[in-house]
Amino acid sequence: MRSFLVAGNWKMHGDSAGIKQLLSDLLKSLPAEPGIDIAVFPPSVYVAQVAADMAATPVAVGAQNVCDQSGQGAFTGEVSAAMLGDVGCQYVIVGHSERRSLYGESSQVVAAKAKAVLAAGLVPVVCVGESDAERENGQTLDVISAQLAPVFSALSGEELKKIVVAYEPVWAIGTGKTASPEQAQEVHAFIRALFAKRDESTAAKLRILYGGSVKAANAATLFAQADIDGGLVGGASLDAKEFSAICRAAE
Ligand code: PEP
Image (tube, rainbow, N blue to C red):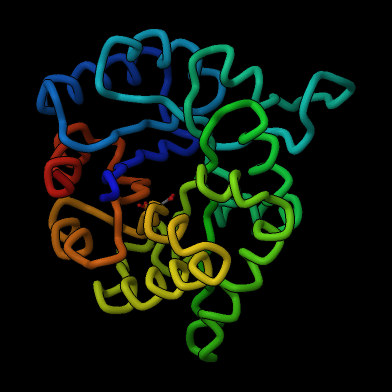
């Protein structure tokens, strides 16, 4: 049985006061003991404070990005997975489409980041997804395969057991266009089958999140699909009521 995970990617939004308010509102609207895993992903400068503030709550904390190198060293501007773990972070998003498209992250770099996150004992949330044009051209499943191939090469069987995958069609991120439950389910089932080719039991336990304009109004039908195990939520995670309604839909 897979436990659901609802993850809120705040992207580059918020300030100290706004984040305190958002978390206080969120804690008031979430059940005291949600039957699912919940995590928020603040901008990196706020991760330590949010992790400290959320320590005794059901809300876990993640980072939106990480250095692909482990250890310490001359990597100006970078933050290591170990540093994130040191301040209480549990998850790290790797390969978000904005990082792939705006910052040129290749699938090889994404796989190296996932490896570094695992080495620090944290959980990578590996994002994959096709563009509008790739879907139009019937390339969706090939794109997903190609994005995951370096992950399969870089991670051991034991490491693959510990990751979370997020399917985020690029055309649905921040656009208000959501994949239909059937479109999402088709890709989720395909991803699970790719893992099953390596190991059936890893595939059966793998959590695959859907991301792309998830909101309270569409969460329940998406989460009812057999291979959807929660959501990676952008815009709607900045609204406590909306985000808690999505969490309740997953319960
Ligand atoms: C995201 O940023 O991962 C995302 C899915 O954004 P949104 O929910 O706003 O589409």
